[in-house]
Every structure is written in C-alpha cells, then in structure tokens.
Image 1 (cartoon, rainbow, N blue to C red):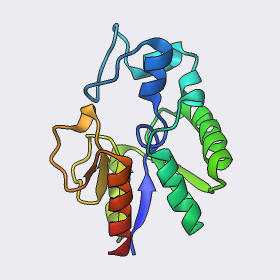
Image 2 (image 1 turned 90 degrees about the vertical axis):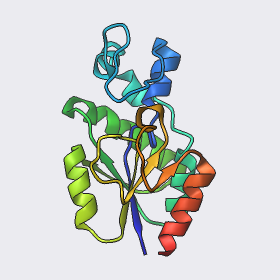
Image 3 (image 1 turned 180 degrees about the vertical axis):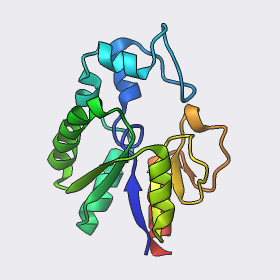
Length: 173
C-alpha cells in the first residue's frame, strides 16, 4: 500500500491567489519570477508576512483533508521555505488543518534535494508537489501549474477529480 506526503505551498496553501487578490500580483508563469522588480519573498515581506497567515486553501485542500480524515491518519507536509516563514506557516497549518478537519499533521522543512532523497529512500511513498525543480518525477504527483507545464512527467493532475482518482488508484498498488 502506498503512502502520500504533501508539499504545502501550491498544493494546500495558495500564496499566488493571496498575492493576486491583495497585492494585484499576477499569477507566476515560471518558477523564478519577478513583478515590478520584486520576487515572491519581497512581496511576502512587503505584505508583512500576512500572505503566509491568511492565504486561502487551494482547490485540492478539501480532498486531501477528507482523504486523511477518512483514514484517520496524520497528514505529512514537506515544505521548502525560508526559516523566517516557519512561525507563520505553523500558524496557518494549525488554523486551517486542525480547524477544518481535525486531521493531525506533521511538518518537515526540507530542501528540494532533501525531499527527493527522502522520497526515494522509502518504498511505496509518493509526494504531491507543484515544483518544477526535481530530477526524478517517478513518484511525484505533479499539480499542474503554469510554472511546471513544460515538464513531461508520469503523474500530472489538473483537477480535484484527477487527484482523487490518482490517489485511489495508487493507494491500491
């Protein structure tokens, strides 16, 4: 039976939507982007880190919480972010995951390389992710975004239904 772990930003927390709504920053079309000479880290700081606290959940959030609630298993989050974001991220996770579903959780701060090493060091593990920066996507379920669209990967999802079907199918293998 396969196990699933999740990236946070772009998979559960929608920083891009928050920045679009509150700061009028267009959605990114590539991983490293700037708008008006500022990157995501600059925009988050300029917004006094409120994006990290108040960003909405993604469209996949409910499905992922339901999946874990039905199985009564904690959600494991692997996130890559600056250390000064962590206190805000923990508050967002506590507020949204615990309040919404009662699902327990575990957060691990990992670089892309550490995520990849952890993923492939354990059998039957899949990562749900949106980053275009991995070397091997064999066990990564890629959430389709403009920033990763050029990648040819074995597991790409574009909708809640596709993610649900993918999780159900892979869970049984």
